[in-house]
Image (tube, rainbow, N blue to C red; front, side, top):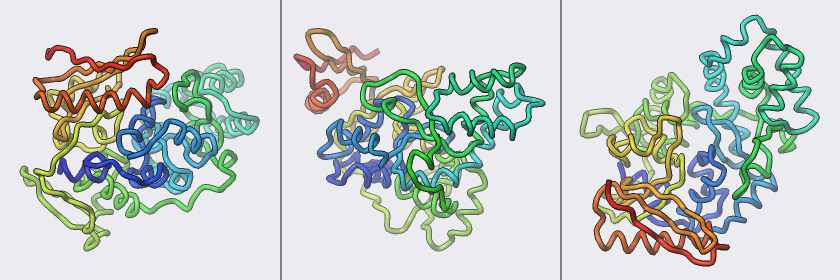
Length: 360
């Protein structure tokens, strides 16, 4: 399962495909952290420059929006138009079970949505500003809750540049997707198509895995409807795993090169049982209590440490924190790969270095 996941994620061998094709194979990249998709593409593509993604984002060929698991993802515009309506039940359920829903008891939801649409039709707004303007009309209700309502249940929204481009932080601004893209939403992907797309990127997988990745429920019935279009396996614990018949399933002893994954990478978030790529012990170190998923190091296909870049006037250092002793050969490979990463993400730094911390 590890090698199948790595191959489908372009982590066994970098691909010469273009960014849009890779994003569609992966069904997008997690994008809570603005720089993360850039690193995710760099580690998967044979020839990738930061401006490759920035150009696609600013030209509206890719978009950043709330999708799977009601979290931010970067996807192609064409994928967004079909995925977003298919995932509306996820946003509906997220709103219904949110603390914000209880704080909005008694408010006319349709009136708030209509006002939110009107406000957004005048131009992009941050969540803070959207909430502030809604609060001016409904002062008895929480501003954050009012903004969350509009972002969850109004017409689909996307975030707009420059936020989400390399190195740019600040307030996220939202705008209606149809106006931004100049195209209508839909038709929605069928649940069957959503499952097939997931399996091509993350399979073999269980029904629970499919639901963990998407946030959708009731997918066992969808798998049953797919019937003979899927192959069924069992893992070492006897659990049913499903896959598309023609997907790659390389041998378990296929060599896996070292790789640097960004924060929130989907390979760590798209299965209920993550042991195919990270142990539970290491997961507790990577997944923080405040919801951050740290950038990680793959050695022989599994998470074996974390990494970060430290910048000073004299240069940039890639700091690797291994979870256990790493062989001399793997340290050399990580050093070489780390210097390549720095040449992309810290090209302006006078010097580049890779440093390993002691095993803790």
